[in-house]
Every structure is written in C-alpha cells, then in structure tokens.
Image 1 (cartoon, rainbow, N blue to C red):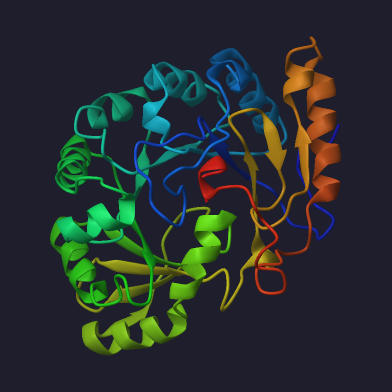
Image 2: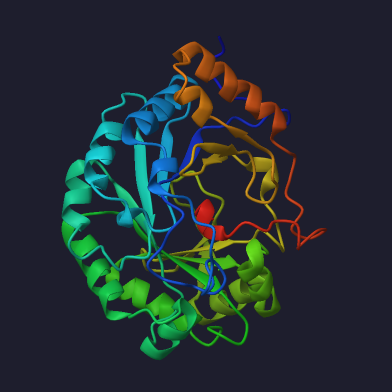
Length: 328
C-alpha cells in the first residue's frame, strides 16, 4: 500500500485538521451565530481511542502535521490526555492547536507538557466593547490572560488569527501589529469566507487583503518573509524586527493549488475541502471493527474526491454548515 496521500491534482497531503467538537463558548457572528442549533452530541463524537486510531492511520500514510480545532477544542474534557496520546505517535512531528484562548490561562502549561508545540488564537480586536459585539457577549480579558499564560509556558510560535472585516475592525490592523510585536506573537490576517449563514453575512464586510498588505508595508516598512508551518499564509516581515505578518487570502488570491490538508469533523466525517461538500464518513468503519488496512484504504480512496479548488467566488451561498464544524 502506498505510504503517501496524493490527490488527483498531484498534491501531497501531509496535514490533518482534526475537530474535537462543533461547540464553542463564544458566538462570533461569522462562525457560530447566536441561536445556532443542530450540534452533534458527545456520543456522536469520535472517542479518544477512535481519534488515536484515525491519526495513526493518517500518520502511516505520510501525514505528519496535526492541528486540533473545534468549535473550541479546550471545551472537550480531558483534552490533555488525548494530546499526549497523539504526541506519542512516532510519525507526528508537528502537533498544534487552534483556540479562542478564553480557557487558556489555566491550560497553557498542561497543553505544553502534553505535547502541543504551538497555538493559533482567534482574536479580531483589542477593544473590549468590540470584542463583546463580535463574539456575542464574550469578554476580552480572559483571552489576553490566556495569551500571557501561553507565552510564559513556552508555547511558540503563538499566532494571532484576525479576521479582517471592513467597517468592523479595519481601523485596528496597525494596533494589532504593534500588540503582536510587543508580545513576540505572529499576526495573521484572514479574509472572510462565505461558510454558513454567519460567514455569508460577514461577506458584506469583505476586505481584499492585498490592499491591507500594501498599507501595512508602507506603515511598518515590511519586506517579504517566511515562516515554517503547513498553512497557506503568505508572510511579510517588519524590517529590523522578528515580527512577521501573514496574509491568508482564500478569496482574492486563493491557494488551492498548494493545498496540503484535509479535515476531520468531531463525528468522524472526512472533508476533502473547506469550500466543498465532498466527504467520507469514517466513523462506521471505526465502530464496526474494520482493520487498519481497511481504514487506510478508505482514506486513500477518499482522496480521489478532493476537488481542484473551492467555489467561494462562484457559489458563495453553497456551504451551509457553520465554520465551527471544521474549525476554518
């Protein structure tokens, strides 16, 4: 059996984004709007034995990067024990986590000790009132406390993910650059994506990041840069500084031709593209006693469904699932 995952476009898949829950303790309007319903139940989620087995199957096929996502992954009970189990799989050499950081103040050090090497934190504003509006009533201070704890625990790099929204936070980009520079964080600006009703509503606030990049480059004297990692960001670096600013542009300048990732929902559904509905349910195999060979064969077969690119531009209303289901 092949020890590599190659899709029909010849892209080598080395990166699995693994959702632990579709639930979150915030309600960012572009991701999980207030009143959202239809969440899966814990009994529908893959249990830790099943997750470990899936990750091992992907690892045997050449996947070396795992990112734990949600919803909010820190809301999954006993997450550190799962992290330790995944970190012990020999072929996994990059284990990271995406979080809103509201629960990070008390978990940063245990996460580091369990095997998380780096984190991405969603933070769209540094203003408490605006944070509450964007997140449906959330409080900013626990996030800032969580970020401080992550730095003290030695999690690095810490990447701040800021969704750029015209008329909402477009007056804060320079402030966020300075904040990240002062705290030795990496900033990544992200274009809104029309995923779910919230994402489609947020598209009214869409900003082309190529314009933002030019503006920030003039203000901060930035030059092209690079940063290790498996994601799609294109980086600039502030001259005479270690600060890097990444730009993730799925709409204005998509990166589908270099896509190296697939996504697994908390329920065990393997999605081949964030912007398409192509998927394969692996949970029945896991719960019916399928062998490792059968599980690996199902993953390989699923890769045949991976499309060349998303349809965000052509069919922005197409994806109706909430962003929280797969973690973006």
